[in-house]
Length: 220
Image (cartoon, rainbow, N blue to C red):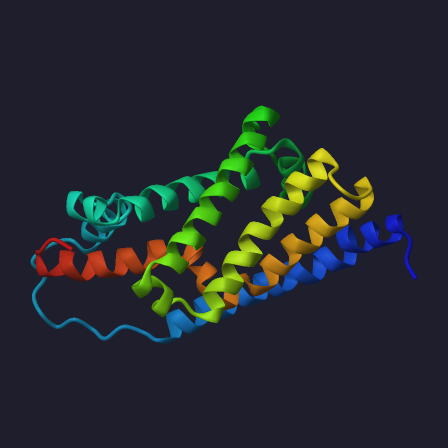
């Protein structure tokens, strides 16, 4: 049986390497599937620019229109909060930046730790609120699949375990850190094979739709 330190070393070493390999391979496979679908040649005369239409749609679809905001205010606001919160906690927390620097060879400025800590709490609350709202809304509950619940759980778990590890809640520091790292590794492993892949494909799909409309000379 491994000691706490041995378990931590495994999670930080071989465990992390396995998760990263599966993550990268999965992302490559998913992009390969998309690109292999191909695209039929458009024989119609171009009436506009594909590039400008695609770029315009990436921006416009990232900002909710007035009617959508009025109709789904909670979903829009909560969605922005937890997406921004995830970005801050993952990419702007000093220890995480040091990890990225070890992997890719460079880092970037971090936000003050209390700010990131607060954002982690806000993000957890936002994700919980989204789940409760989805379970209480008849239509959303009907549309929610088991995969959606799994994705939600594996998204919020690193935030909770990270908060517990930082504040050393409940268990020893090495054990808490090991659990946090393992929760991140689980997220990396399932990421390419679930709806989480939209983090990479959303820009591509929006550009594609906008490019088609731009070629036809119409707004997407």
